[in-house]
Image (cartoon, rainbow, N blue to C red; front, side):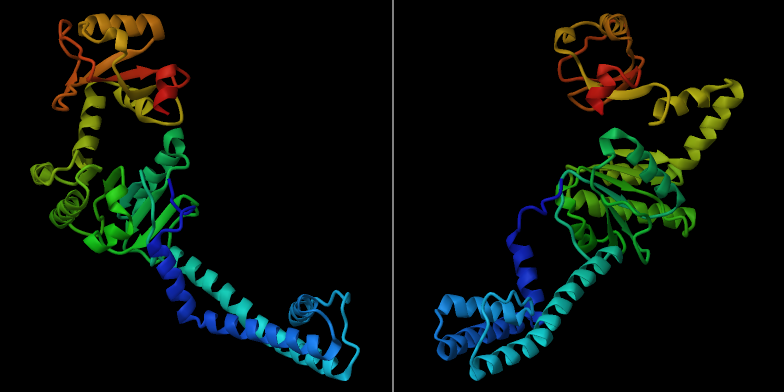
Length: 349
């Protein structure tokens, strides 16, 4: 969630620095002095109250001209002419400067030159066709439809029109990660740089992982590697999940060769668009302490869910197709296949 509704001290400092840089304080001071002098002059020349004179000065300076108060004397009319002439110029400069500040801030964000104050967000490192597909899939999932995502990539401008996509230009360095508010990020996705050879690409991913884990070890880090030989380096860097893109594709193809249609099943399970879902859920309280077979049968019978794996709460070990007599504990989590309109899918979404 964005913290834009709260003006942090650092943001107020930036605002004051911007006002000083654009000399807005001088323009505003000049306008105030002009209104006060005009009000005092009107009060003296037209024998009116200070409040009425001040109101007339503001209306005249802004060239609104309600006509409820009008000078009758020559001195009052001269003061009115001065206020009108200066009002057009000074207010024009003021509004143009303010508009320019907003445009500049907008351009900075589009070109990745700003910094953001976010929490529980996703950071996506690098941009290519693969990263673009990841972004589309995330936005197709109800859990991430409006979730803030920060793109950190060395490209010129923000690549897609997405109101909840924030762009930071640059490499995955400590300074740039801080601009992405890494300390409050929930997930970090590190994609390989396709412009580099396999070894250089994976080396860059490992270094990026080290930077992320150093700044926020609590963030769930998912990295993509080109070679399985480099997986151990990412594991040492404390990456939470490592995906070997080439190995995953080759294994899918070989499995499909021997077991026709297996890719259709897997595509349905991981697709946010159609078919069944595979979701990560907590063990129901009433099933804690029972065997895996009892949990499997109970969930299938009551809610038509199929338990395919179990994650141990103590060490995070994932057991696919666990033994039937394995005890299921309350702090374990289950990977279940369910329909998209089931309670488990709705709770996950």
